[in-house]
Amino acid sequence: MNRIARGILPALFGVALLLLWEVMVRVKGVPVYILPAPSAIAGALWNDGGDLLVALSVTLEVTLAALILAAVTGAGIALALAQWPLAERTFFPYAVFLQVTPIVTVAPFIIIWVDNVFVVLLILAWMAAVFPIISNTLLGLKSADTNLKDLFRLYGASRMQTVARLLVPSALPYFLGGLRISGGLALIGTVVAEMVAGTSGTRSGLASRLLEASYRLELARALACFVLLSAVGFAIYAALDLFSKRLLRHWHESAKQTDI
Amino acid sequence: MSAAVVLQDVGKTFASGVQALAPLSSTIKAGSFTSIVGPSGCGKSTLLRVIAGLSAPTTGRVERDAPPHSTSFVFQDATLMPWATVAANVALPLRLAGRPDAEITERVTEALARVGLDGFAGSFPHQLSGGMKMRASIARAMVTGPKLLLMDEPFAALDEFTRAKLNDDLLALWQQNRWTVIFVTHSIREAVFLAERVLVMSPRPGRVIADRAISLAGHRDDALRLSHAFTDQCADISRLLAEAIQPPVNP
Ligand SMILES: Nc1ncnc2c1ncn2[C@@H]1O[C@H](COP(=O)(O)OP(=O)(O)OP(=O)(O)O)[C@@H](O)[C@H]1O
Ligand SMILES: [Mg+2]
Figure 1: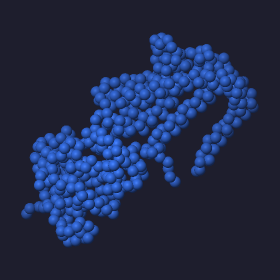
Figure 2: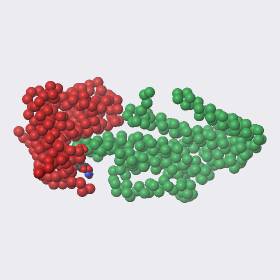
Figure 3: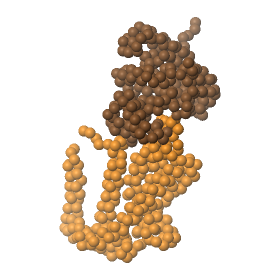
Figure 4: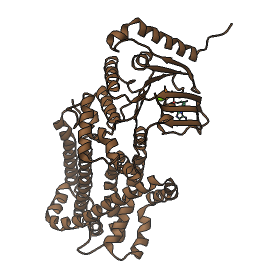
């Protein structure tokens, strides 16, 4: 199957689905506060676009900040845990705890303890995003080739040299795999946090707008928010995918171009 | 001639309880080329690791007449860092030793030329064939000017032609440099072709059950591979190995 067909098929499917939706809504006369037609959502996107983009930038800001924080702290924690096996045995269960606890249940406490809304959102989104980075990076650090490790020992490499020249490069593909998962999780974390924290006013994010609109039964606007959030999730994934392929393109199987 | 490695009652039992090496003693002369053959799983790799100092013997002593970091190891697979260029891979031992850049560039270029990889300095390992990767691995092993070169079935994964070519090249390099080489192989022909001395090991726990000097007149080349002297030596080692695996039944 060639490249064009690969792009066209999903697009055709999507257009067909939207058309069916539009026709059904019009034929059956479904009221707009139950299910707006795609054209109504597009209208909402067009009319409220500027306003929604501002909200989008707020959400995106938290998401990206949380993702960067998760990448830095996650990689750092993994590095520390890999260096000291005792630390791993002591702290890793708490990392798992962080992962399995639904962040919605933690949100009320964070909201009480922290005043700044941005920081509240950041903490919650970070909690949602950090675990895949820790666990993947840890796995990568431990997957360094044993023969190469022996070689480093034989040539008297210091611990720093071994970390910088062997462990970190070995872990990089795993770290990037974790980062791709965390990109989506950071967005989910931000959205959930916005909804729970009930941010409002001009500095509120897209998820709060979605919730507000749905309370007011402005379903076209709510769905417009939904469309934007999905698009952002998709864009984050695509950007991280591209980023990781760029970094690994010279050597890793996952980024190699197939030569057919 | 002085001894490069002295093994005195060296035994190794792993924590798992597996006894890999029965106490064995041997002396390896400086500048010599020694091959080790033995049945699979008899402890050859373990012995090399003990000699390298990568693994401590449970009994006995290993004496090495080599300053620290002057031992090089070549593994069965090339063991290159996939994220680094060929030049960066070969440069690794020098980088770890903190040598100045100018010296590194010079020695890496020279090492690559000697293994016939000039022109591939900037390539990544996945762009090389199996034989070329092995050459890069050998270049990395010799870039430090080692005193002791330990090779663990380095050519086992290569095809017959590449293997013969690399044998010839390795021999030429050894004749120029006179490292002490200990070469583990499954191939009796390879062992006899390369070495001045062949050690035959018993099944696990490994002991040295035969120690043969290889005396082959003349230059070691393709013609030698077909000569009677060569095939006789191979047959001799082959018989020793067969007996080691299945001892002759005494009537
Ligand atoms: N790290 C280890 N821990 C426990 N047992 C080990 C370890 N390394 C090797 N062994 C065991 O020691 C024995 C000898 O292993 P070794 O790798 O030295 O054999 P070998 O002669 O190199 O075999 P081959 O010819 O297949 O490479 C084997 O039974 C193996 O299972
Ligand atoms: Mg082995």
